[in-house]
Image 1 (spheres, rainbow, N blue to C red):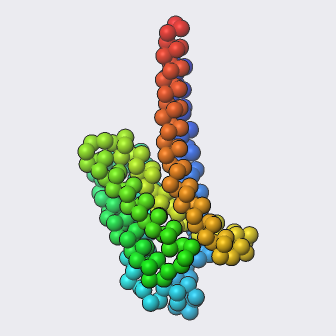
Image 2: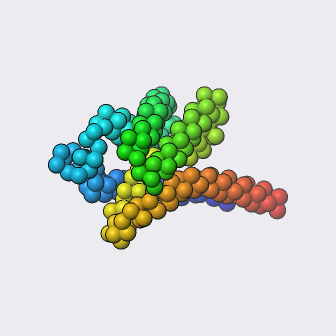
Image 3: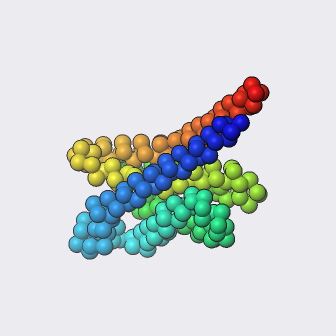
Length: 223
């Protein structure tokens, strides 16, 4: 029993370490995206600024809440913050939900204002997916289903991550040289991963937990 009991904290520790590494890498990607692309949104002479110059309000409604959601989402996955400062966790969760409710529809309106045959449908898939997963997470927590709430937050946040991951991949010279086909392929591929990978991770966690429980029971029975 002692061995089985010790293995569970060890598994949780490995999971926490993996989570920290993932978010550290994501932070690095945020910096890469800022240096290679987003800083030019503040340069009035840049082609990127000129592209969105006609819809500044929509861009602010999409960009600012989206950026807030990106940062708050990372903090929402902190077990230490949730356990020690539950009120802060809940307040940030409400802000995250509000940011999604503003940013996602604004992104879809931007896509309609600046239509792109290959990207506009992807923007709607991402936006609707982000809204639905976040709304489901909110429903779960309001009805006391905490574990399901966490799982749906794990499904929600990757839709926010799409913005950063896509642009960091496009910063790779080989992808950038692929031109428009590379852009469209990257956007759809990252959205597909955001749709399906979280559920796969959640199910694998459940399978691993079940396996540890069965091993613990078998060890206890053998003694």
